[in-house]
Image (tube, rainbow, N blue to C red; front, side, top):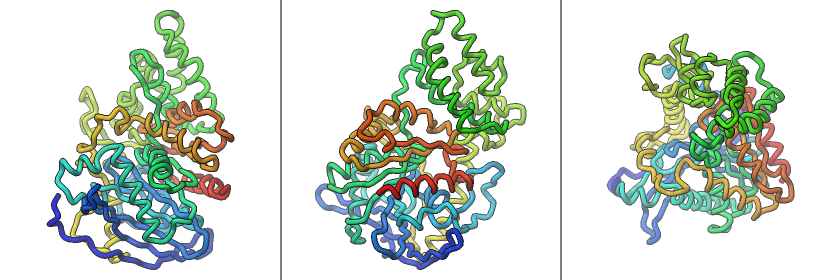
Length: 465
């Protein structure tokens, strides 16, 4: 990148309204920029945000981040919690379906203002320095937290909202960001956060060697079972409670026993076959250790389709069914970029009237490839985030955290969060960190019932402050 890029437009605003439970709610949407400067004060990048603000006293403000790394915040914005939504991430959808925005009954806007932040390299946010300098300033787990925390601070100052109650919501790698942003804001910037909502977060514990450690297999098995139960119409919280108990009980023990107990592996193979609904020979060949990629090809093999890692019951045709390994892109990822990009660009440029001479990037493979994964606390290890989660909750005895997962998510399985949270000590009130599960997968909010259930649970958390 260079400073010769065309300048971004000045902030643009539009007044809109939505009917929520039959009542009109008026709000102002703003698309604007926040400058990012290096240690010497030189402009090094520009963060673009979309905010939705309702007039009124004492309204909280929630800052929203998606993941990747390399994803813009459009998925939370126009799929989950913004006032408008576009369908994506559901079975039977085609990329060429109309990208029509409609009012979102699951929006959080009636109880909190919303600020959706696109990290540099996503959306319209951009670096203004060369690639190597960009990697040092933006594209790594630590620098990412530093400049995004400053962006939150800058928005609060710019909009005179320092005294507002503050919340952070992050999805996937944005869920990894949530605790780290909170701890950084607390300790380095001097901004307290009242609560976090981590949506399908990357919070899995360190897995260890899959040849020895049971953790990798314990993390994914319950989500595979949930996908099977949903297909059979038997998915309930009670049914899944039994699966969770088996997973961290008898399943873990039998995995650890290995060949020291001749009855252990046959016993777990029988049980896993029953729970997963898969072919008994397939389960036996894997020793009851269900690899995610193998599972997604096996569950619908007779139909020539693949399941999605983000929701195994959302499928796409496998163009290479006889290949030893999956060659095509994920069925959900193939279908989300077109509708979200079309809807967001149309909304920003036509509805709000903010018209940059730039391309909108919903999902940046380039940013993901530039990401620094050399750190011990690198891009996809939840340990740094889990540590910061403990520290942030210990630092502020009023901080509350809601961790929200889809039952069938295999990209960021709910069991990883359960295993992580169950090791966090009781710091005054165990209910300050809650893990909730909903029907669906990584983007469980694509389902109306799950979206409304999440809205209800978040409203209950915010009402406690």
